[in-house]
Amino acid sequence: MAHERIVFLSGPRQGNAFEIDDTVVIGRNPSSSIYLEDPQVSRRHATIERTPNGTFLRDLGSGNGTYVGNRRIIECRLSDGDIIRIGGTEFRYEGAAAASGVHVAPPPAKPAEALGGHVEAADAANVYETFFQAPRTAVTLEQLRDAQNRLAAVYKANQIIASEQDLRKLFAAVMDQIFSLVPAHNGVILLKDEKSGELITEYVKSGSGNTVISSTIVSRAFEHGEAILTVDAADDARFEAGASIIAQNISSAMCTPLTHQGERLGALYVDTRGTTNAFTKSDLELLVALSGPAAVAIRNAQYLHKLERAYHDTLIATANAVEMRDHYTVGHTWRVTNFALEIMRGLGWTEEQLKQGEMGGVLHDVGKIAVDDAILRKPGKLTDEEYAKMKIHPERGATYLRDIEFLKPLVPYCLYHHERYDGKGYPFGLAGKDIPLEGRLIAVADTFDAMTSNRPYRKGLDPQIAIDELLKGRGTQFDPECVDALVEAYHAGRISRIIQESLAGGMSIACPFCSTFIGIPEGTPVGQEFECNVCHRRVKLLMMNDAYYGELLAQTS
Image 1: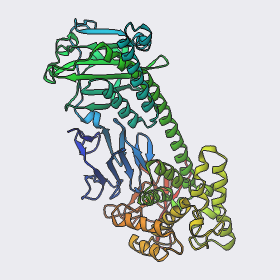
Image 2: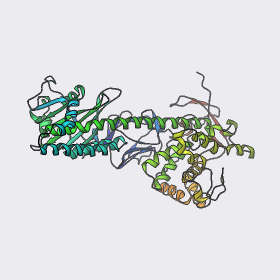
Image 3: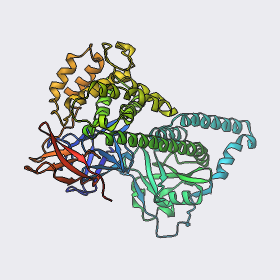
Image 4: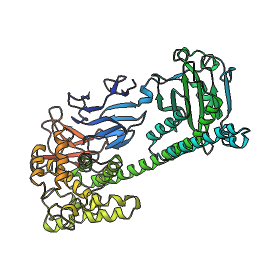
């Protein structure tokens, strides 16, 4: 059975691999599935979870963050080849395609042009045109009916493919439709890597265990724009030196390029096993007929993915701008978002709702950009006048979001997160279900973080005490269902708070810029300066009301 896995690219376990079952916990706690003895790693740092909708990497409120590539994530659906960074360790995620034993047989010693007598190769565009002209060229009624049936089947398959926008689901839909139309046992979708130009296996549908494909037949189809059919793979010269082909009992194979507006995106490969059900020229025509719409759908899904990524990165940059302005509450945005996501899951939100909820959590405090630094960074209690000015930030944030069309759905997370269930909140004094759900759940997440986080003027509460306080306010200050969802997540061990606690026997402070914990040797005097080993900003150690914190210093260069 195929298994997904992560491969260690750095650290003490470099070169080792870890297979992913249902849920993998990564952290500094020795009981973690993957134990990382690294002071930059939180005790419960992140999880990798397999679901019917894909494999997800989730940050658990870590201090130093979880990264895919160069992007800090809260939750991310993993794709084959993604590079994950947690603390000082890097991993490569290998999806079902890579981990399933997909093997690309090497090209033969003979030139690739050496085509055997069992091979048909034709320009893919010509095959595509021939397929759709078949009803016109039919001579008999039987031929006409066959051509019409094939056209109807391809039309139906195209409708199914075109309706899917998620790239991973799209791969599955494409291959399912191919399998419904041709007698395939195994299928592979390969796409061109934008950086290297190499063909990368993106999806595998296997009915016979390990899947072996020929690099030569795939390369030939991709590079020459040819639709290729081999009806006897064991005798095909292009499989020479590939004894595994014979061992896998491959009887025939087909491959066609995926082309969109003249650009070759990748290739579709399928094969049959055993001595029966060899592909025919008609099967090749069906494969080519599906490859065109599949390429269009894949390109559209890729564009959508890029737009979503740009959207996400823009919001993260905005959230970081808010974080940088208030270094006393560094990490607040990320923690609140994670707490809110757990509430949303407890309420049964869909994956699409969670995506929007994540962004709502990230931007819930964006209005603080409009608050004066003197108020925002004041370490002590605010005066009535200062508090009145602070209270404008939900409305200011909502105004900011309303001015940007694609951010309008996030307004409720920002505008209503300081409303109270009993009607004593602000800015409108709404009560109960009159408060949009988005605001009610952020209010619970925000309050939980406020109670459990350290401040210069006080230490954070133990999380159990904070949970008890939420329960006291259940139905008065807070929405009962949202409180119950957070409490359930807490007791299930899915809530990880970020506090300035001891690391390896010493104390630490959070970097005001990037949230990384900086270890401070015991006995270090107040005023000592340190450099963050992640962002390389200079930080000064300060103290207020018996609590240590870091002050960001101006960069000298």
